[in-house]
Length: 132
Image (cartoon, rainbow, N blue to C red):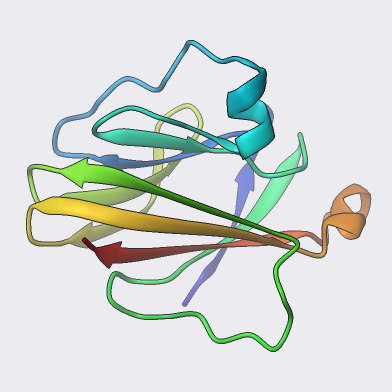
């Protein structure tokens, strides 16, 4: 597990089928912001709390994150990976992780921790994947 510090100027990063290079969702409404994600078939935009940087820990598909702390939020969504190339990207389209997987639908669990530390850049987020 590697912790990545990403730019979160637009308060989003992406989980996508990087073999397809899908465009990020552009139509946002209040519900998307409230639920902390906006999903299309082959890409999901996930929304951390801060608007400067975010610390992201990506857990490889099939593995779980073990933490004694309860997350302050948890988002569950899914993405379809057609090419077998599951990637985590920061804005605008910088790859931070890439996994070779079997094509199919993957559940995404996105959890946020230490959100009170966002101004001091001490918040962090876990992204986990599981094949449907």
